[in-house]
Structures are given as C-alpha cells and as structure tokens.
Length: 280
Length: 294
Image (cartoon, rainbow over all chains, first blue to last red; front, side, top):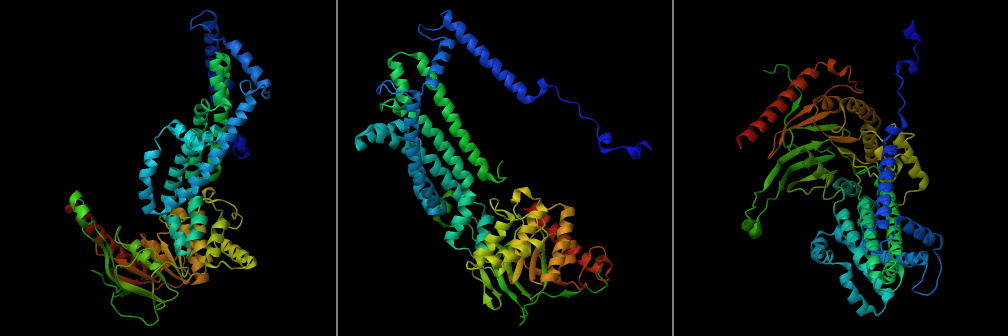
C-alpha cells in the first residue's frame, strides 16, 4: 500500500541542492572580480616599479582621482576647470538635440523610402555613399556653414546618427510580413490606416534597433567632435591631455564608457518592449 | 475497378443561376522574365501558367473544400477569390459582380494565422471590426468582440498577445477575426496545416460546430482527405500543375451535424475516400515522375 500513499513529493525524486560555487552567474562574477583584481594589481605594481613610461599613474591614484571627480561633479571655475558633471551634461545635451533632430528626419523619411520600391532604389545610392563617411569629415564643413562650435557639434551628431535609423527604418518597412498586409487588404483598410496600424508597428523592432545603433554612434562621435569644440567630455579629455593629467583622462574614459553602457541598456530594454515574442 | 457509384458531379461549364460565387474560365499566368535587359543577362524565363480555364459554381451556404497535389495552384485560386492576386483570364463573380479587389465580404483565414503580434487577441479583432466599419458604436463593437471571442472559446484570453498562445489558440483568433466582420463567405487557406494532429482534430470539430451555427459559405484549401470529408458538402479535386484544372467534384452526402467517430459508418464514406485517395495518388505520382524526368 506504499504506492497509494505516495504523495507527489514522494514520486518526484528530491533535486539535489546546487552548491553555491557551481552556479553559473556566481562563477562568472568570481572570474570577473579575479580578472579585475589581477589587472589592478599588475597596473599598481607595474606603475610603482617603472615598467611603463614615466608619468603613468598608479591604480590607487587613479581610483582616488575618480572618487574625487565623482563626489565633486558640479563646480565651475571657468571653461578650463569645469566639474565632470557639467561636462557630461553639456555632452548629453548636444547628443540629445542632434539625435532627436536626426530621429525626426530619419524615421519619417525611412518610412517613405521603405513604402515605395521606387524611392528605395532612388535614395539608396545617396545613403550608401554618405553612410561610410567619417563624421569628423563633416566638421570643417559644419564650422564653415554654421560659424558656431555649439551648432557644429549638434550638426555632426545629426549627420552621423541619421543613417542607421534611416536604413533600418526603410528596411523594416520594406520587409513587413506580406501576411499582415494581406490581412489589411482583405479588410479593405485604407493606405493610411495600413501604414499607421500595421506597417509602423510591424517595423518597430527594426526602427528601434536602428535608433540603438544611432545612439551608439552619436555617443562615439560626440567625444571626438568635442575635442575641437571647447566644452563637454571630449574637450575635458583634450584639456587634461594639455595638463598632462593622465589619471583624469582615465577617469573620463571610464565615465564615457559607463554612460554609453547605460544609454545602450535603455535601448536594449526598449527593443525587448516592442518585440512581442519576435526574434527573441 | 470502381463498383459503387460515387457522387461525382462532372466539372462542366454549366452556369448555375443561384450560385453565390461563379468562377468562369479563370486562368492564372505568372509572367516570365523577358525584355532586352534580361536577354543580355541570359535570365529569360517563359511565362508560367499556374491554372488554366477553371470553372466552378459555388452555391450559398455550402462548405467547399479544394484538394489537390502540392503546388497545383490551390492557394493561387483562393488568393484570386480573395482579390489579393490579379486574375489573368476569365472572371470570378461574387453575387454576379466581378471581383477586382479584396473586400470585407470575404473573410480570410491564413495558414500562418497572420495575427498582428503587437496586438492582443481583442485588439486583433477590434482592428478588423473597426477597419470594416469605422463608425461602429463602442457598445456594438464590444458586443461583437465578446460574441466572437466566446464563439471560438477564447474567453479569458482577450488580453493575451499571440506569442503567449498555442498554435491552435492562435488559429482560433484567426477564425474569430475572419468571422467578426460578418463576411458573406469564409476563405481558409490550409487553416490547420501548421498544427499538430491532435490540435488539428480538435479545431476541425470546432469548425464543424461553428459552421452549424453560422452556415456561411466556406471555401477551404486542404491536403487532408479526412478533413475534407468531415467538413465539406462538396470537394473539388484539382489536377497537378502547371495549367492545373478541376478534375472532378464530389458531393458529400453525410447528414449534419457530423461526428468524426461515426462519420466513417456512412455507406458512401469508403467509396469517397477511395476515390479521393486514388486521385491524389495518381496526381502526386505524376508530379514526382515529371520532376524526375526534367
């Protein structure tokens, strides 16, 4: 009668509890910390015993600098001595304006190009020619046309972040599943309703991946452009190079990376939000 | 040799005055690649005649299945009825009016469901209802949505997105969406083709039940002999492509409501099944032979 008494817990064999050190995430974290520790140790020892060129700061110095900059982000002693928080906000503001302008142009234009096969073929040569141009090549042209470093910075962001969004939007719109269009057709949906209710939502995952790539490029470009412009994180690096303050440069590099990571995660979350089970 | 007479209606050009849908001498040609440019690149290709000279009269409130070997142009024919694919020759009349474009008088059920993944079950239906009647009152709309979600047995899943549903449930939404616009006829392109055998049988029973309630004209494309026999009043058997045509039409005399357990006890079941099997087998063998020959 043991069988009839068997409870579900008795039938399912007890799962052995996984030891903590076998968990994949914990092991990955351990490896991460180990690598980081070894790197910092190598840096510290190397800098102290003169393995690198003269003037390379030690890891502990750099971390102290970092802590100082992070705890005093907003001070303003003139354009050449500005807290990293202000510089970050200046860079972010330029990126935001240029990027939003680019999006406002690229998304509608991409939809128009994607809808019409003729427009797709007609505009493709322009896009393909302009896309591989380095954003910095536009810098002299921007300065000449706009006569203003602030506007030029925004212009550079605009011109470099327009292409991925444009291309991805046009591609997404052009490759909407034929079945969705057939559904709209059999219902007798108007062209406008089909575009608003079917084509744009169907292309949204592609549009958002375009926006994500564009944001990555905008953040790459702003630092380079600002080295020639006078304020912002890029100028901060250039200024600290003129001061030969290597720890500050390292601090800025770390902060640029961190902000880029945050921006990218934001768009990754957005991508997931619009996917609805597609390509996930 | 066949001994018992099977209810074969010869595929004639007779025109029925009561027909809801008349397919008259319909031909579909997919144009090949011609012209100077293609000649230069050596990529010329002749025209492809998918179906040729098809005649079919469909009476109101009948369930018609179209069956034939793979690639015989069944889907092409259905797409032409739906208005999604232009007709190369002949005409298709719906209530005496030639079909030129898609319209909500023909509800379509797709093999791959074709649900909008970003819309919930309810929103998919609402999109259809509001597209067909933009001025519908909210009260009437909600009543229709509720009614059809209930009809296909999806009450409780209104706010789920398609990726949260099983294949069978998705096709229920597809059927509800096609019916919710109250079309004159329902066009189904292998509606259960992507489902596993059990779900398939379950949904066939549902279609039988729904059809008893609604009695709309249905044109269904299928590969399954049992499915056609269970659901149809008439079965149209097509020959192999290219230039496919209607071979013969079978009348299915089983009384309704039908039941899959008892349907094979009907005296005509066996003969009909044998007739269809031999037709499909003959056509499929010819397709294979043609492929080997080329």
